[in-house]
Image (cartoon, helix red, strand yellow):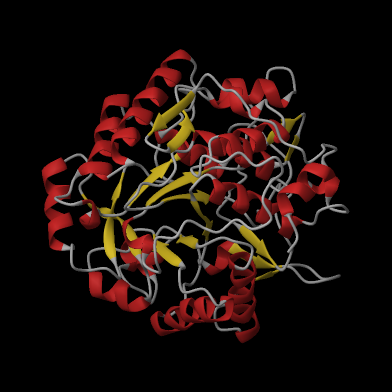
Length: 436
């Protein structure tokens, strides 16, 4: 089997021989290790090889590998792992390399950030969700002004993968698919599951055709449905195991009065078929499908094939979260999740409130096996600068660089000293939970 991590290192001009990486920020909880009390810029300005060496140094086995292993398995929490996982969405476009007007190499930045994501606990998994995989419709590969639309919610299928994310300077040496596989292998050695965000609103999807103009996606077109399925199956086969489905609440025309997407949605039975086919064609029984706001009518979403959904359990009330944990403790196929924040978060929440929500997510249950799933954004672990927020970075793609360099963007995207202190407090919460 191809060693994607070694291939990535060589494609970037590094040798594959690894040395232990000493980082003063390494935090231990039993045999679980990650870096905490750190600013993202301190990770993102490192080389890719340094990131790999750090991930191998802190891997859970305690064994240091002088070269990256050929076979890394996903953390094994059984087929139903997604039912109690913590989903942490990383906006891989926002942390990509902003060089002048170009945005690129978000997958490399995502790898560099992995050591600062707490690994999975004994009883449940942590899962990183990448915000962008497919090209966005307008301005892919470029950053724009902070108020110019460049939405991550509009995607192109049948067009490969985003120029914001893939390192296209090295694709002759390592193709996009293998770059994703390297990311997944490195996440797995760190004890994490992985997934990505997708959209299902028809007018937010374009289908690319050779030598023709893009056409708007149509759920009534069997070829388009087949394309949607196969694009997702390909990603599953690269090591992803979770899909976060935007606007999932409204599948089949449900509660359309509150629908804020653009365009038609798949029918209920149609989506049942699609989710079944993704699982079946990929040959993976472990896939977790998480739906935006797909809670309330629990049987509707469980029968649809979803694993969990957001925005039902009140995250600020520890006792109510614990109560819902008790109600669902025997339901192992599907459960509603606790939302620390979501992709529509417009900022303004205090650090104390975020920490309180994380506390509820990690500890509000009688037994660890009863834990509800939870949903967090990058900002819940690494606070963003004060004049932006999660949703703004989903809708636009500004560079915050003052000199046109990636380093300046990374330094200015996040808060400084208070962000470091907050990140350390998040690490303390996770440290208590990881050995439960």
